[in-house]
Length: 333
Ligand SMILES: NC(=O)c1ccc[n+]([C@@H]2O[C@H](COP(=O)([O-])OP(=O)(O)OC[C@H]3O[C@@H](n4cnc5c(N)ncnc54)[C@H](O)[C@@H]3O)[C@@H](O)[C@H]2O)c1
Image (cartoon, rainbow, N blue to C red):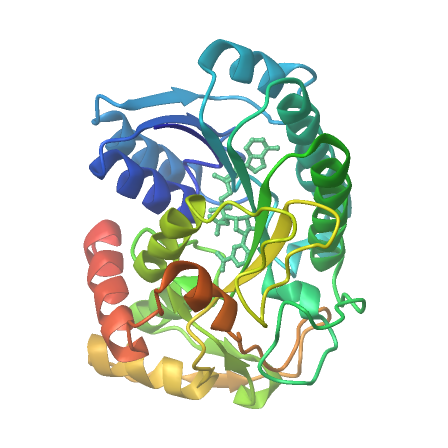
């Protein structure tokens, strides 16, 4: 298969592209290498992908007029996995306009491109943040999710709705994933595991929000991309739900699927695993809750299992050990 992956130099895009290349697929990667975080890390990921003959990189902003449409005409991919976005809950309070451009204009440009040049399946990253103020746990895809707490979550929820209208109007098979806090090797420097590892190794204090009373459904990146790869072949068809838990739309080939570990972990236990694997204790500064954040996330993964037979499996201490080994080596710490 030929697969277009947007955001291929990003954390998830890198791991997914590597997995697809290893399975013998061709990957066209598009990424603007934005400077939201260290561009050298994105370049390093891209260099590793470029070592594969089946990989072709395009450096461009997805919202650039005509760009994605031109790429689809030229490359005729079988499927598109859309991971490029301005991510991050906290930064969306500082720089909301970036989210408008990358997430809304970018996704709109992709929908228009796929409308003109159809693909077998369009898969798009959304987030557990769309569950917002919901307190009923675990989160189910069929739960109402109308209370976003950050602008990031609002843009992601909007893309799910935009996608639904295009899936309905133009019969485009579409799957939205809601990812739950992904961590692992080549991880994002703006996310807690990297921030914590960096501070601990340098002997600096770490900031622990909500005084440590946070639970996250930490999901190991290898498990996540295995889930994505399997979902690529689970193409939604109107009138063919896979079971009681299916979020399939009654009027469009459009479905939303949680990809999470289904086993939430206390933040202080996650930090404990990191301390154990680094053999160092963190100096913790307890902080209040940050605006836009939620105290807990927990995925119901019944639908993911019904569609793919896969369950996420990497226990946090094991995933953290792999992450920490990579982190030390990459940063020479
Ligand atoms: N990592 C997580 O825990 C997590 C959780 C929920 C959802 N997500 C979503 O998953 C997707 C991948 O996240 P990630 O963690 O790999 O983030 P990332 O920031 O590492 O990757 C996103 C990539 O998109 C690129 N990009 C950003 N704006 C662009 C634009 N306008 N045009 C072209 N490229 C652009 C960036 O350069 C980056 O390489 C995103 O859609 C994100 O919102 C991630």
